[in-house]
Length: 339
Image (cartoon, rainbow, N blue to C red; front, side):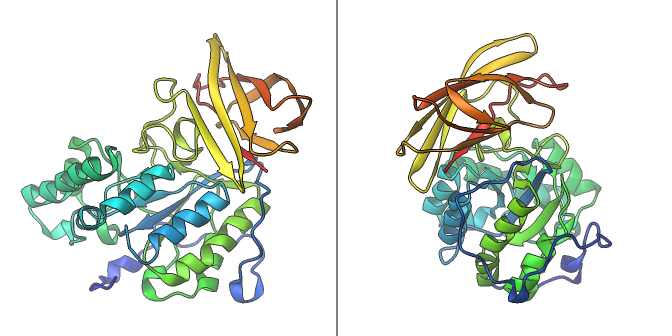
């Protein structure tokens, strides 16, 4: 996908971040692994703008699924309308779906009514094609002023820019994109796009690097605009529009990795704790790692052998966990990855 780029596109919200991690020669992706990070270092948000795109969307979604990772996508309304089946691909993968305007104009040069048209039309077409209502908005070129913020807020949208710019829009190589992602710190957001082939090539390595740093690819909180655990307990779960997991959304979910499926269901909840039951299918010799939200912790577990946040069989393919809700008193359902 090509278009005229503004110099502002190269703007980085935070440009002086220290490089973290080891850069592998050539930025080549290693062989995929079924192991998952512990998420002990926190969450970052991988974002993909401008989709969906026939040539690359399915490849990005497939890689995210393979690694049990989530992401936030910011489709334009025009592309969403023209690629309704790929909007369903986003939704079915449990990705958080945002708003990126109708056709990627310079909104800061437009009237209030035109800005509203750009955002509201996109809200409508995302609802029509994916069945979700976006709660996060990525302004084209990262350009924002008071008019844009006011219109976005009136539509229930939180403006989200980025901390790290991958420069994939500017013909960055797969190696350079991967190196940029290594600068991510917990809570931060990286700008990438749905259409560059180099981004598709870089994504496996990015996910492997995050695993090595015990970071997980989460989603963006519509309250804070920062990266958090996948919303409402699944990799992209809840309504996929970004509603946080406060106990009012979906009470169950599932995730499949390399033929091993783990399903979870919320059980009894009281005071500062709640129960979740996990069931594994597709494999008898399994290992499931669960991912509590920030502030949550495991109080106790039954029906499986436990080592930290990882469980292995103990005569049954089902087990239960009691979680402390944490200081925010959120009954977010910790999702799991089976390997």
